[in-house]
Length: 156
Ligand code: ATP
Ligand code: MG
Image (tube, rainbow, N blue to C red):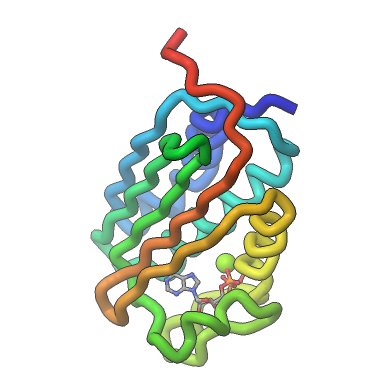
């Protein structure tokens, strides 16, 4: 299927707006008009997991920046948050099934620890790559590179 990335993101953000508002998070979306060839549910699942983490592990009054553009024929999608961050030691483990950082703050936040392992599998399915950049108490940026772009269409 041809999926309009920006439309999917807008709908997802709408669904999260209660949580975003309750934490007074300032969210910005910067997305090119990209059409990708992929399964819509896969794309939604990837975005949903990364955005839900950026909210759950953020701080009150925090910010989230979602960016989506095309570079070298790949879709580059990133979610940057100002949350609790992930220590160097945990950075490779958080993509494992059921792994959750054993920190006071993430202990009280509910989750199964499956989200990122699913994201990793889906990204691999599309021959993509994941880049994680994080600093404790500062924030996290997850960037995905997915070679699924069909076209970069102008606004209609
Ligand atoms: P689920 O997504 O299944 O509801 P979860 O959020 O705990 O549960 P993952 O999304 O796989 O599971 O994330 C694994 C762990 O990585 C989290 O429990 C959390 O400790 C850490 N983590 C993930 N994203 C972030 C982030 N943006 N900032 C800080 N820590 C994060
Ligand atoms: Mg999660």
